[in-house]
Length: 448
Image (cartoon, helix red, strand yellow):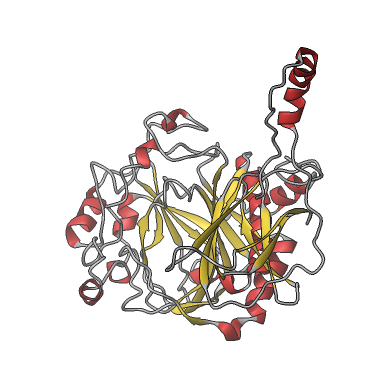
């Protein structure tokens, strides 16, 4: 198998020999196996036996797992992040070559066994290890000079929202007091009665705008950045090529979106569409690599990729309640704006519930992204979409040493501020909907 080289010694009666072996033992045990060479003629064989292949990457850098065809040609890679796990559905007798994702150096080659002793749902496991011959690891968070590139792409947070009468053209942050939230047109927000009847997962009820079920971890989630936990960034030149040109080229492949569980959206009543990035694995990995550099610049942290998906294409009437993301994996995130066809004055903001009962509406245009810390920051699009289509890619990462919230985690990274639980969804307001009683509480709330 593919595992570090190690040796065990058989004792002999000659003391000098044992002494020499004892001196050599530390260097021998620490030695790594030699990295494999590319095997000529290695290829997959024919088989009808389906096998689940479980993969574990023990390296501190990303690897790319290439399936080898019956002619030995390397297929599109499946990426396994540093110290990450993955799984592939394959067949008995199929072979793979594993390379470093960045440099292409070969880390491992293997084939799934042709036969399995136990019938029914066979599985095969493979782990990848460091080997002697790999290039030195580049531990920089991003290439030299890119910090100035990223800084130049930052959206000025005080940029005005203009023109005042057409939010479809806005690229800005708009902050609202509780009374201003209360004065919004409530008919544009939350679930309808029909949508609640159509989806038993919806827990926030008619006119619901905030998820109240997955929230207990919020007080334990430290900030990762020193700022407010969100910002607007224009696409890099590389991201414009990777995401925008890809989306425009493959629009004809847009199909219906699968159901989204959890009761966060109204997808069962208002269908969405999708251009499935998972079907373009090489493109997806390039987008992930670019997002990693952007988010590592923003956080100043080494990050592990956990999920990138889309492009999700919302339809007229779509909505998404304010919520927080998974506390173990979705810690530092980005939503990439690929395209939008919206009505006059129909801008569709990402809503953020901020401390001190403030609410932010984040408006962006095609070719911009919103960076945010979604593990603690309630975010969503509770306003119903007014337009034809609105297309996003979502990308999620976590710090390399993050393993989930605990009572002690609140004191890590940038810590948990004292005003964390002072949003309009927290006591004393506890606003979860656009229902009359909640609107009244907002209108009566003392101005900030």
